[in-house]
Length: 310
Image (cartoon, rainbow, N blue to C red; front, side, top):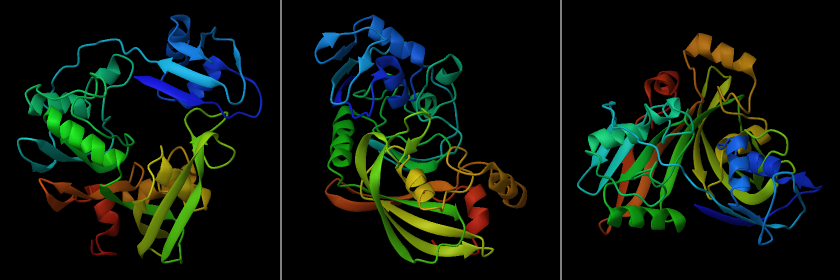
């Protein structure tokens, strides 16, 4: 993959530290390897890892993904819809969508399951470790995910996602009672300057405009709110960051919320992951508008089944 962008920083910063914060899923040692092998250029020139970046520097990265065998594994899949071209899966929380660095990260992922289910015949346009997958979400989010089973469908799904002609709606459970029935959050979102895991709305690195729309569907024990979320933009961690930024974080969000609240939710409701689920997909398929529903997983469903009618 190639990346080209301009920096936006207040003070000079080492290039390896800056890129490690920006690409949080990659280790710093891997970033340094890319720099040492000439895969990172600043303003058109090859650099060393201790170079200090300035604001508005032009960064170019050629990421080399080392080939590693990914094995098919017979992992159960919750299939919402499938035909010869596409498969829509209701992904369980806790499973990685695609392999991540490290030996352990090459196993028990959605890709491993898909290679088994589709007999290892899946198209690749986004790297050999993401066959058939055109989008991704957090490991601990449950959701409806589209899988392309051939090149034609892979390019079609990539195009409609890029053109934002597909709609995806989420169900979230948040801390506190939100009394405003409908709301919109607008802000800039980017990498946190000191915490490589986090995104932030406050003085972010390389900020991008983000818009989130929400509607309150009901309440739980007059303590938590159930929301339906519609994203107008698609930024990393957008729902989680936006809700936390207005003081209503998603339950069990270990990055953006309070562990004491999480412990209470785990004890009372047996919820042990962030309460966020990609519930509904709307897209044009074979010339017709289609809607696909991925039912809530049991942990979230047991909390809200008596409170709302989805």
